[in-house]
Length: 194
Image 1 (cartoon, rainbow, N blue to C red):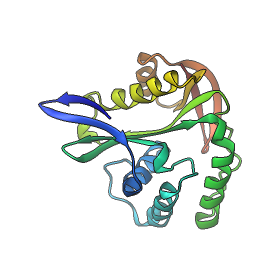
Image 2 (tube, rainbow, N blue to C red; image 1 turned 135 degrees about the vertical axis):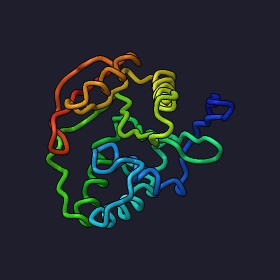
Image 3 (cartoon, one colour; image 1 turned 60 degrees about the horizontal axis):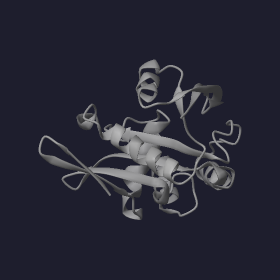
Image 4 (tube, rainbow, N blue to C red; image 1 turned 90 degrees about the vertical axis):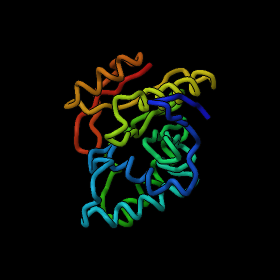
């Protein structure tokens, strides 16, 4: 567990539990620009959201609580980062995307392979708007980068939407650099590595 202070309040970084699945599901939706983390869930997304909660409760999916670190202030979830070993990506992707296809009809199998062996992949991150700009995101990122480097990973990678140059600059300020372009979830992304 990592600890930092903001305005006299402790910011904790901890492993997620299955009870965090509803929050993780919202983080995943925010990560693919389907929902702002603070927004009211639209009725048309309720079925997908509820199914994502189930996926987040599973041990062996991309968005599993086991792959997630939670940032908390005063015991409240304020942000999260889903990240994992790229060596397990293909297997977890097949299961995760298959489950999404079964319940929502969304065929995600045509997406590029986002990561692979030797990489520690930072998949989805979101912070509640009132806690942005105070270092919560940097804390989560550093937590996972430190974990990856201390566990022998050759590189840490992530994707950033090409239409979000400000976000790319943020990641570059944390030591990431452009690697390649990828087409996923119907948009072009820059893959960054560190």
